[in-house]
Image 1 (cartoon, rainbow, N blue to C red):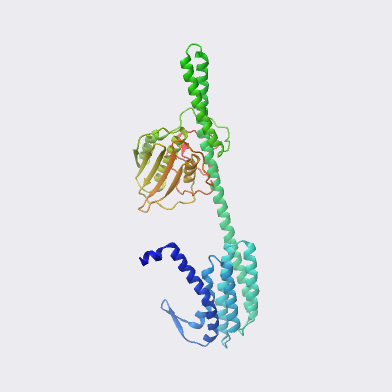
Image 2 (spheres, rainbow, N blue to C red; image 1 turned 45 degrees about the horizontal axis):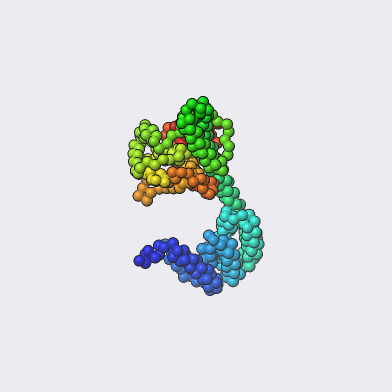
Length: 438
């Protein structure tokens, strides 16, 4: 029972907070204790090494506030600086080497904190902090009787400047990496939306063709065969409503793509999963497809999105799972279809290099569905998606936030082109070589 209590995140957080503030509360005691240990030869054993207390206590002056660095780095820096300055002003000894030693021990540690702040905070915060540390350190160089105060003052300026530049450089590098990652994600989202737009374009073009044909038939037979004309008008009405619904859903989220040639072939769907089984077998992966539930009618875009999600997930197994089999479960329910793709491979965390999960998540959320992916506790990787039989429209999720996938496609159903390398020409909805591109 006690073990579970201490493992609770809330209890662990409170314990960490209590320890941090206990160290801060002990800081004045340690500062007052430092002058009395100048001539002490007592030591404390740490990892089998005996360290003199007269050096350990000044080091604690800087170490005790370190627990605040994560959330309150400026407060931690201020406490360290104040404690080190008080020790420098109150500790006096005939040993010049001792005075210089504790001075370097404390203030070089403070300089490292300046670099940490520069790496984590904006320049408007880190620059004033660095200037304050330089001023205090230069002043503290002349407080005690240690020799060479000018040398220590010059060392202070150089050490603070070096620490700040290293930290600021690390911050700039991190920001640059984040910007590149954000742009790559945005490019992946835009590319995926354009691909979805091309597929919808194919379906709309097909629907308009059907409408034109049925309208011509109705016009020719309306006088002689009214029943056939009525059937043609019914087909026109149903096709028109479905097409308008698709346009309303997609025009909110998709930009108008560049002019692309339309495919006359129907888009793939869950009935075409056998082609993934064949492609997986050719790549050395045995894909086991299990179906559950009674097949319910699915709109064309939901059927296509379900096929593409399974295609991407199986492709990731081929490239990254290091296994020779995976299982695909298609659960058809009255109002939705549930997909689960599981492998027993090496799993791994969701990475940041590829964009396969971005595309799958976009497809699911565009239709009002839900999507999750991640490693399984027992090993391997799991991808799940729940798509409504009738699309509910795009969700309000921010497209730049979805996690990235370090699994790139390899099956004939996917390509590995990065956003900057994606082909300029159209990708048809039925071409297995381009449909799974990320």
